[in-house]
Length: 177
Image 1: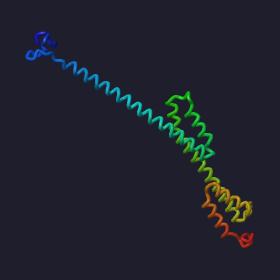
Image 2 (image 1 turned 90 degrees about the horizontal axis):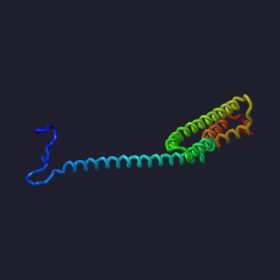
Image 3 (image 1 turned 180 degrees about the horizontal axis):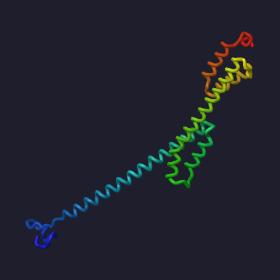
Image 4 (image 1 turned 120 degrees about the vertical axis):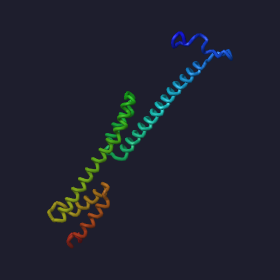
């Protein structure tokens, strides 16, 4: 090439066929097609991600509603979470953050309730032991009320076990009463 790296006029023409080489245009079209396919794939991924996020938000709403219905002690927290999820002024990012925090918040609330019930159970056992030892405070009516409270709190098996223990430990006078 006498004129540097540049091609000369007519160099791309195949003199045998008298046709011009349009491969550059074909390659450009292929590159443009690949770029458009990549953009379409990215948009499709974003739409799919958005759909999954919406499903997650709906699932979190259902969880909060179920907790509010099933556990009255956690209803105020669950209703506040529902209000935040359904806030029309909240951005999508805020709604996603709230949805992610609902499960953790409700688990903390449930753990708190479990600890409260365990503490009530310990208090009931302490009262029962005091009654067995004769150190006062409990009469048969209050023991029955305590056992009923335990059964209503979801500790039916423990209440039954405690009642059986009290029957075996009762003196003949207490058993007759």
